[in-house]
Image (cartoon, rainbow over all chains, first blue to last red; front, top):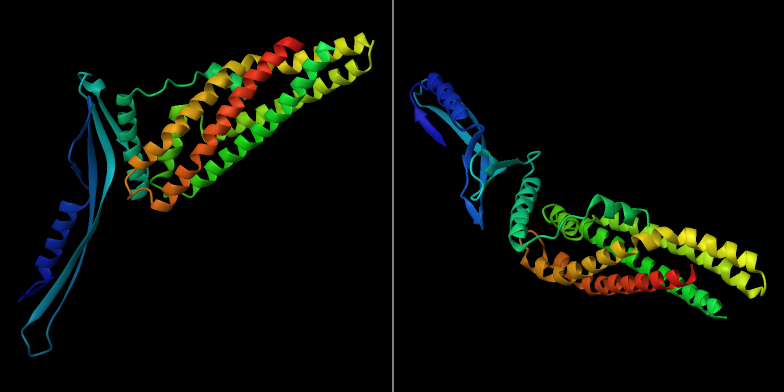
Length: 138
Length: 179
């Protein structure tokens, strides 16, 4: 983006500083997904970076120009899971994703959703530690 | 004479079971290798799915099968000693000592057999339902090649799990007769 201005120096730094503070690290709620008695709400983080510069025309010419750019990433950082049947704070669970890699975050998100689907389908009971010990000592 | 036949039958079962354990162990190792090659997004999903549905991770399955293979070898060796003692007719002391050793070495298998049989059936049922689950994973997370590799390897694992389950049942029955 390039804006031609007569005297830009003061405004550029203010604009960039404001954009940085507005956009960096903003967290936003995604669209809720319902699975039986549970609702999953992903939380996304927006990381924006800005950069800019300006320059004057040659001596004797009046036109000055400035340019700045805006770039960023959006990635899921957590998922909030609400249990409809569990009232109060106990019905709210927040699962944070470790690290910032999108792949890991997606994997975690899918796993959580998969677990919710399984819980609806009647997942198998966990193998008891006693039984596992028997198998490992067979 | 009858004891001789029973021990010979046990020896045959142990041999077949050892091969069956090895075959199943190889297919678990293949499964681990296939999962390792999956995209980062699908890998933890498949690992967790196996663990939550069979009660054990792939590494735990591997450890269990290695242990079972070793147990079968020990039982085979002990049964072989009893068979040798029986061959020397009239050597009751050696037969009794051999049978006692066989009993001792078989106890963990007899105690864990029921759980192992349940687990092997659980694994077989899980593997039977796996192609359907794999086909539910969106293309974005699992490409066609990885999907085919996972699905085509399933039938062999179902058969191997059921074959080993039957051999465990047979071994348990034979051991209860000879010890």
